[in-house]
Image 1 (cartoon, rainbow, N blue to C red):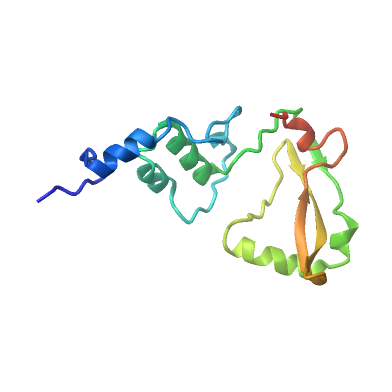
Image 2 (image 1 turned 45 degrees about the horizontal axis):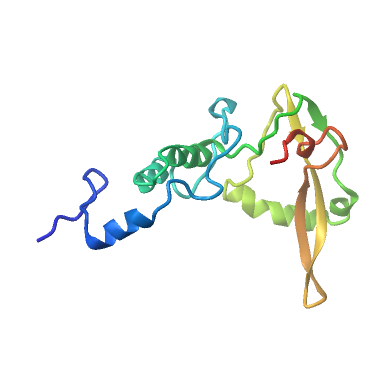
Amino acid sequence: MSKVPTLDTELIPTPMTSRLTECTPMHQPNTTSSYPTFTPTVGLKVHSTLPPDRWESLLTHYPDPEFPKMTAGIAHYGARVGYEGPILRIRRPNHSSVLCIPSEISNNIAPKVEASRIQEIHSLPQFYYVSLLGAVKNQSNGGFNGWRRIHDLSCPNGKSVNDGIKEH
């Protein structure tokens, strides 16, 4: 009777695992980053449906040993977008598109807050960006199908979050 591998034991070679190992490339596309993908010093923790230690455990045998650490870090602290611009305080009014539909925007955000995907911050840190909210019409088969909330990372022109992210 063959021993079933666990996370604490070595993978037992079989014809199938040998074939998988031969075909597995060292790195998958888009799994390396040119900037730090998370920052543990920010102090905010992210709600994740799969805890960070489970991500690391599930990815134990991934060919690149840094990828499980990166994935667990993102699950724990959130993902950085690669902003490398100046440290600023940016806060601007929302786009007029959301001012016209406040209840729809509130109804759109409420389930995200309840699921801890959006967190309320009671006081702003020393430096911050508050991205503008906007709304665009969703269309289906040429007809109006509700609103889609957007976060405008391209404003203000010349000092936006997108302006501070290097092109690859």
